[in-house]
Image (cartoon, rainbow, N blue to C red; front, side, top):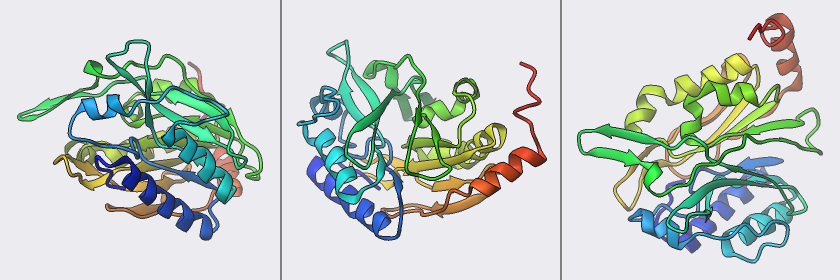
Length: 265
């Protein structure tokens, strides 16, 4: 996606993409970070904040996620959305997961807040985001051998200790909006590293393109297998990257190179 300031338009586009993926057989779909809104300023996201309404959402974005998951009968990882924080001047950058019945099954709040400065390009998420404090791993059902999923958001990708703390999972889902500058240098490298060192699949859903506010995101949404091979990829623009979770491939990698069992620390 290339989300802009119009929440309704972004939700419409997300629904279009989810429907296309479901029509091609997808049973789990992930959206990118801040899929409902990338506005002109941080104040736009703060204004769009919702309270976490759990299993009976009425707020627009959470209702959309719940209803869309139920309508298509899929597991839906809702990228990230702005939720209310303890500090009213900040927000939580939260990833919500819904099951095929439209029930919220997990919430992960981004823990590591992005900071970057190079010339005129500057970011400091600490100014407007309240960091989360808990890792999140969830058990899913109805997806065959895919049972254990770990969650992370964007800048979290640079902190391997988070992923080790999740324990053994089958899939890591990482919504993101990496900048073009940092993405060109590190995005694919980091994703493949997380897949290889944790011997699991990695599904990364990314914003990708030039946004109305002038921000350029790197894109390259992809599915990576436990050996680090890229199974599916979408460079930039609004579209889908579709691939299969292969339980046999996962088992073969872990059996042939049992690095997880060889850990000392």
